[in-house]
Image 1 (spheres, rainbow, N blue to C red):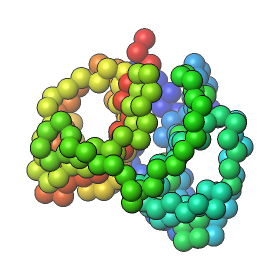
Image 2 (image 1 turned 180 degrees about the vertical axis):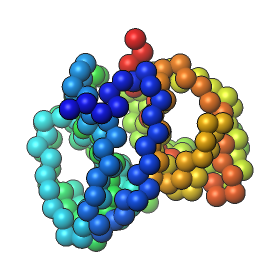
Image 3 (image 1 turned 45 degrees about the horizontal axis):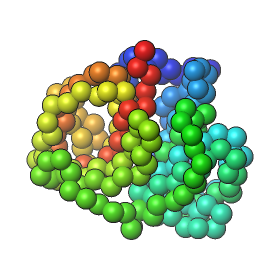
Image 4 (image 1 turned 30 degrees about the vertical axis):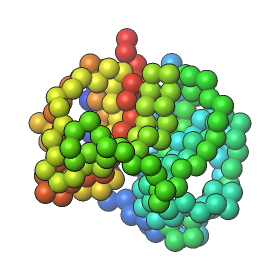
Length: 214
């Protein structure tokens, strides 16, 4: 199965109807080559349990609700990175919505770790009104959360290696449109835009430099 497998295309997916406590799924990407990957947003009912067999690298972001991994409870905006070979059990007592990115890594992956959403290290961004916390830094790739204050404008920029955004809170905007919480946007290599926020502000997950450049 393939879904949004062509990284040369700009993709926008609306998953705003997913809610913690009500089971549902919104597939975002599935590829077989050059490196198998499956990206989804999933909502789980209270009391749900499941497992990850460790066959692939797995990134997890808690979008809503709370998640337990091997008994450790994680609150919203918590980020988990499980390297290949790391099998875990997962459950949610109250229900949750998760961003799940399972793939065969293209860079060396050795460390597994969890960052709690209530203890992230937020730092000043490149322009006033931005706060950034780094979640993972690879050889050419970077994953971060970014808080946008209301009425913040960023510089026009080009995405070398592409960009992936998941809107977690508020409304994210650029010259192409407005994207409420629950929207997933993937922009290809060498695409460009001028992002900004209105009166709501926004919090987003951002991944850059990780898409095919051929």
